[in-house]
Length: 92
Image 1 (tube, one colour):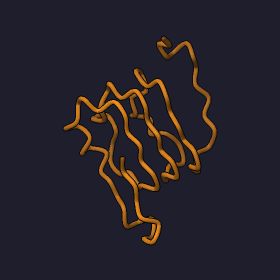
Image 2 (cartoon, rainbow, N blue to C red; image 1 turned 90 degrees about the vertical axis):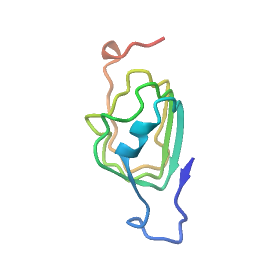
Image 3 (cartoon, rainbow, N blue to C red; image 1 turned 120 degrees about the vertical axis):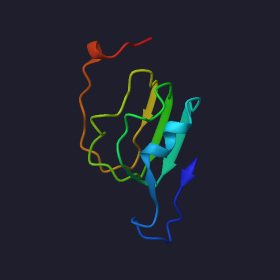
């Protein structure tokens, strides 16, 4: 669980997406009010549950692998709505 203390401004808590490349067994990630930076191809590909509450994204990065993701919670983000082609996902 990553959580930024709300007393700091949004630029104070920056997390490199690349740091998750060393966590291949990560299945659940909850990030609240965190500013991710970098590229996402090295994000764990077996991630099942991702919560990005109040994180600073305009949209999901194009290099973000959603193939095995079961739950995606974007509560209180500033993202524009996205449409996902269900045929492109392997739903179980």
